[in-house]
Image 1 (cartoon, rainbow, N blue to C red):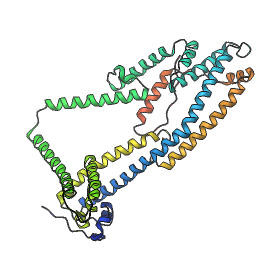
Image 2 (cartoon, rainbow, N blue to C red; image 1 turned 45 degrees about the horizontal axis):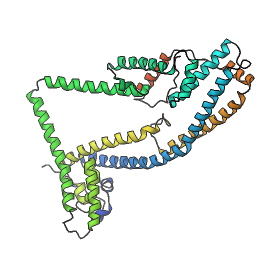
Image 3 (spheres, rainbow, N blue to C red; image 1 turned 120 degrees about the vertical axis):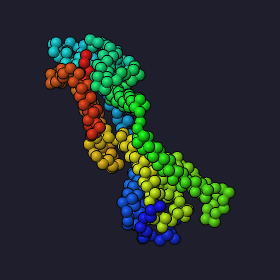
Image 4 (cartoon, rainbow, N blue to C red; image 1 turned 180 degrees about the vertical axis):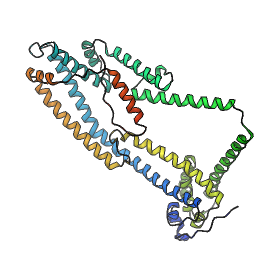
Length: 401
């Protein structure tokens, strides 16, 4: 077995139980590319694990803020918008308030837009009834038309058929389901084609070699687990560890092994002095190769977990590549300020629009958007596809009546 040049560690092996694997590699100069790759992966994984832990902790604080600050404001704003909708409905039938065909058409358009926005947030049968009174199509009929139009766009784009269950929900959800179906069909197609192709001897040998290498890598991690389990077995006496300490450590070992967390397994080995700094800085070539493969898989899982943790915050901070909790907090502060400002404005308007003249002035300056809804659906599609390279803000939608 080839040997790696021996490394000198700057750490004292006597105190290895107080160190982590990261502490060791940070203070060790790599002698080969493999050692450098191993040390780099250890440091990156340690940083990512810290980030994941920090975002898990922040998530609790964020959810508390959403529940105590944002949700009450949103609920108040919804109540006031519903009150505004009913005020418009009342004023629509006042002859001295809304005069002329154009004014009535504009107020009707305003009411339908507001009713539609409220129904997108939450279905309310009273609002549905009001919508139906002013629309040529009922809300449910319009919803079905919109869904059919969206389904047609998505199916043609991805070349898949969506079932009834796939078309429930928003346009974004429909797009995501269609993309998953396309990927699943492509995977099945590739697998089918692969099964029909006759493999050459060279291909078969390469596959067998990869399978054997994979087995060796799995066995390498399993060996670390086996040594830890043997050392921490309740029947094995230890001068340094009590039975309770061994139980806690074994729980950590099982959790790390189940998650494929090689770094944590090595940390525990170092902690209980099963290995020392000299072992970590002078691993055999084959052992490092195995560990590098495992660490790469662990890093990929951490990246995916971190991306999942950050996804809910992207709507608030859409254009920030490196997201941090303080930026999310500032975005929440800004959203709270925006909602409070909207609440104040709605209160002012609720009083002002009791006056027919002020309502008439508002209607006069209101700009009607006459563009067909198809443009909104296509814009949403563009935004969804763009989201794979950047995180855009959520587009607004208007419905065709």
